[in-house]
Amino acid sequence: MAPTPTLAPVADQVTLDEAVAHVIARCEPLVAGPVPAAAARGLVLAGEVVAAEPVPPFANTAMDGYALRAADTADAPVTLPVVAEVAAGHPAERALAAGEAMRIFTGAPMPDGADAVVMVERTERLDGGAAVRVGVAVEPGNHVREPGEDLRAGDVVFRPGDELTPARLGVLASLGVDEVVAFPRPRVGVISTGDELVPGPAPLRPGQIRDSNRPTLLALVADAGCEPVDLGWVPDDEAAITAAVETGVATCDAVLSTGGVSMGDIDLVRVVLDRIGDMRWMQVAIRPAKPLAFGRVPNPDGRRVPVFGLPGNPVSSLVSFAIFARPGLRRLAGFPDDRLHLPRLRAVAGEPLARRPDGKTHFVRVVAAVDRSAGGRLVVASSGGQGSHQLAAMARADGLVVLPDGPGVEAGAEVEVVLLSPPRAVGEPMSAAAL
Image (cartoon, rainbow, N blue to C red; front, side, top):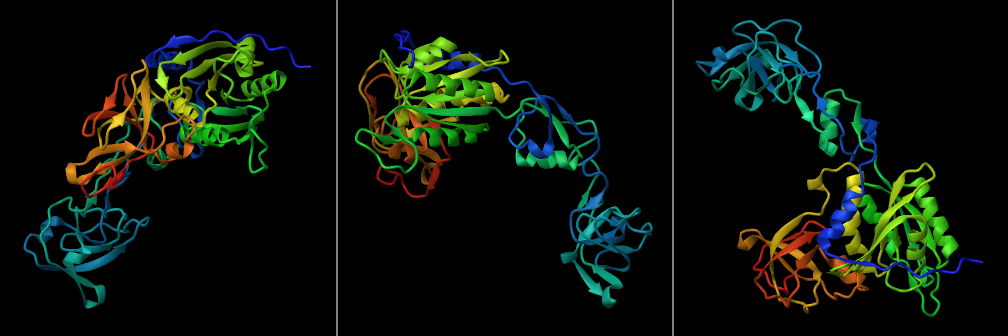
């Protein structure tokens, strides 16, 4: 028989900033270590990368054309004998003498004695390629890539806190770096709780709904740069919830659960987490996503694993992830403070965004578009229903407008928007209908 639930702890009334700061302060970065560069996409560096060699390592041509001495083109047009061809990866077998030219292809090393390249479009091939007519005068260095022009030996290429994007991995490859010191990708377990939930397409019985939170959160975890771990659906059973959470903290670096964190006396997630972890129960002064549980639960090795108890309503769960869980998880991954949060931009309300005063900050789901006809300003309008259960309207949203307590704003007012995805572009004059 499952243990009899005890009364859930009383929640703290906290501000938005206080809740965010509380989470971030308790999500210490994971221990960094060596990682093969081939497996490091999206990871955050924990040490410097210093160039051990110049890039490019030798002078080479940026164009197909003819390598020559710039001085020989001073009286262009001039005709020069072509004494060799130089391809990428194949240095010239001899130096270039005065009054000569060599056919050269992009990326090929510059022959000794040559100091410029004339692109093939400015030349005329003569005598079956034995000679070339050069139609322009050029300066030394024309179309020549010098050694170290991109990076010099000893340059600090990347610093701790830099994310290893595809382009940065390319730079590592250009330097021959095959291992870096980086923070590991956090493994984040996701649990859905509630007797009313049905995973997948199984038929619904009266009073049941489908589990949308877990697929949504697993995708959001991946988008945040972490490794999602599906811990499954758990019914409203204290022993089952305990087992799921304990599995999560034993195998993951953080755990997200949804449901069971409201003010009800027998919300079992609250009961379990309070019993096995050091939790704080918060009623944050925001709408949606007011209830938030956060704390740490020890795993078998004694490490305290961050655990987030997010609301069960789909929109509340998604907003709570964006505002609280995402920055905490990115801190685990080693991201610096200025890369934890989703970007916030100033925008213009394309329609009235009304609300009632209630002492809370409201996050209004909006579509956002760049109005090119108005100097590239960002314009926003409601994405639809604002209920915490209306996930379809949330799915249409590009951002969350942050509305302070009060009556809302009129059309044309400046607002702050948290971007959930890149805004679309609109070339015509904007209106709410156009959005």
